[in-house]
Image (cartoon, rainbow, N blue to C red; front, side, top):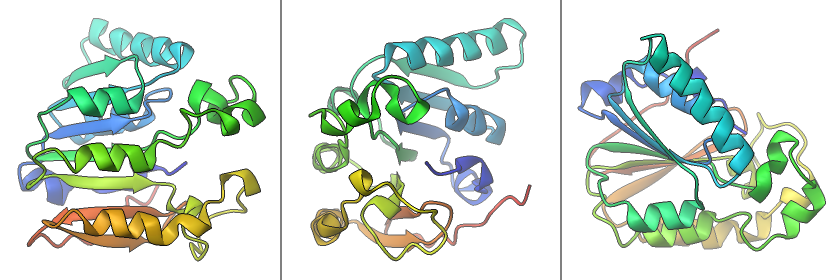
Length: 209
């Protein structure tokens, strides 16, 4: 998994990007980071019931203590169902981070079973759904590019069951179908693939912690 909290979103926020959309909430770390950045609206989905409950409790507690300043909406469903039904992508940062079903990447359930599950690794289907949406002002960030690119130098050794290096060209082909976007590979953490709307240029800057 990547570490979104190392990013500096000030450039995007200054351009009016105040909506964060995520697939794969997990325990809510990326949502929490988006809140701390000052992003006004956050929509995130998680298909694991256990992880969804954990994240929901986390942000409900923040709301109860009056420290939650963002409008946070969490959804307990598959990422493909979420993206299919969701239509408000204007000036949004979309973070695609759904991988293993059942929460196996958070040590919930069987890793081996999750790898074989048909709902795992939904990235290609997610992108095909997004192709049908109005994304002219949408930034898309794909996490864990190391799963598709064997030359991410910053990534630690990857489990062979998570290597889809033979699908690299297929992924790049789908990205090229986003005709209003340019594609940028970032060799940082576990690798990121970023789709930027024309004519935006964005050099990823990092929060050093």
